[in-house]
Image (cartoon, rainbow, N blue to C red; front, side, top):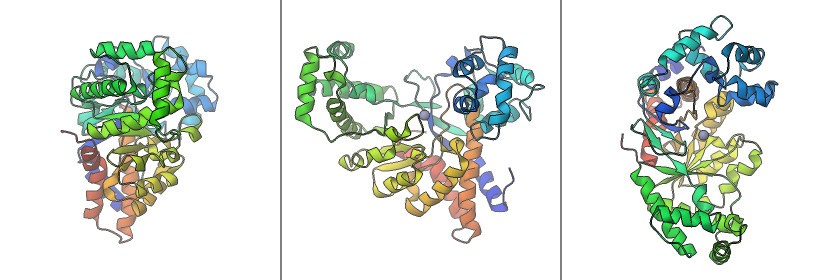
Length: 410
Ligand SMILES: [Zn+2]
């Protein structure tokens, strides 16, 4: 990509900055290095949507990314769709990875075997450090893979919130209580148990819990107590009933404030995105002024409404994780509007949001830097701010804000 002089200066400045990667799904490194890899791993994860929408059957996609099956056959299956998805922003980090890590300027019939050989060569202990620390200058990446067994500070885990907000059944509750050496007979016992579970997670370096922006009713303790009692008496439906789950969600938001954990909130994009719109949190955020909420993905496609939510709520941060690869153009226009509306200490600039293809984090970061440089660079060139101020803002978005929000010790 070609840049203006100012953009170039800002990108160069950002390349020297230490980064906090504010959202990934990376498991411990051995999960990656124990598995077979090949070029098609670069098209695992988000490009699935584009491939399937382009016409690749969903079952064929599963085959394409299954490295246990012969690569030649899978490449043949995949190749016709590559030309359809290659101009999309989900695909770009794969091409950047092919170039930057594996020395191939394109992914073609001629290069796919070479890339595969080089990927296998690099798929060894140390790959995370090589990609994340050395290439991206990431000090730590906040990661959500439903586990806490990370042996490096390069990764900092978050865990799901909703597991605690859905007690499910009396048996399930008993099992959880046994594991913690506790007894649960009442709703208050359950809440005490959840607090203990969260305290335990904190000792495992967990810095936040993740939920989704879903319709959530105001808390009703009486109704929740009745449902909880019914569940403990064996009513299978009561343990997943909405008034109980919603009550518990509100309690969990308060517990997170007590224990200094951030509540990360997924908003937008998946499936029926109307059901996970950031709008659902409008009634929730003001009820928990002590709780710090990290609202994800600009709520895409509801980027404007999400911006206004960020503007109006002191306890809400706007996290641009995933957005730079969903659509750089949507991110650019929305980030420009956020600059108008939201204080600079409330924007979190980058989260790669990858699981298996760790090397794509780098390409995503390149795109994030471009977007940030474009938005800030325009303001510099129009005389709205100086280059030094623009650099300082970029540093806040990529480092200071996520570090302070999550109280990271890096
Ligand atoms: Zn994610």
